[in-house]
Length: 253
Image (tube, helix red, strand yellow):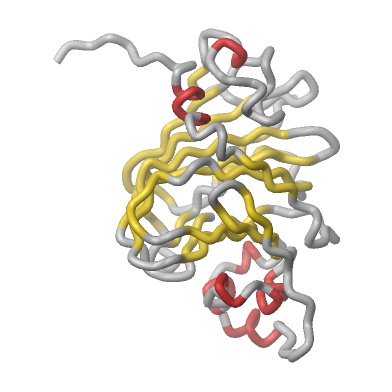
């Protein structure tokens, strides 16, 4: 899920890469084109392993690899053609609590919120309407990565992180809330990318496979361990009015 702390003018061209790493951890890389009038926080809920603390998420700086997604897309050449309330009540109201850490990740400031109850520890610049999550009980056991975005129209450089997942499947945060409301259906303009690994195979029958290995079209060094050099990549497009839900890819037997 992608949601914002205030109204945005437009969001488009969302790209997400995901890969299962070692020891039950997962990588996510997220980018989009967005237009907003004032600084806002963007939140990506993630299925965090139970008991994870505020240090469980590792943010990865891709400021020097702004072309991460265009490089990924190069592996898929186009054919030539012609022509609230319950959660708010559960949150402690104390005056002396330890704030969550804010880290600089490239052009972003970011924080990780381990549980919904921890939102009151979030830097005041990132405050979100907690009643929003009361309308979405499926997220009560999720953690939340929070990125502070600057005002204006921009294509943000890829936001990347690694986290211990509670799911035995690959997760993509594709639910989106751009107006403060939870809609059953929403307009999608998403391209998803993923990779299997030697130890983790995925059910990818409805995904497009790259013709060559990732090392042929991705700068592996700049990708900071996100992409496996000697594996193919896979791509899937989500476009138009679709069910507003997150995307999961099952593991192959």
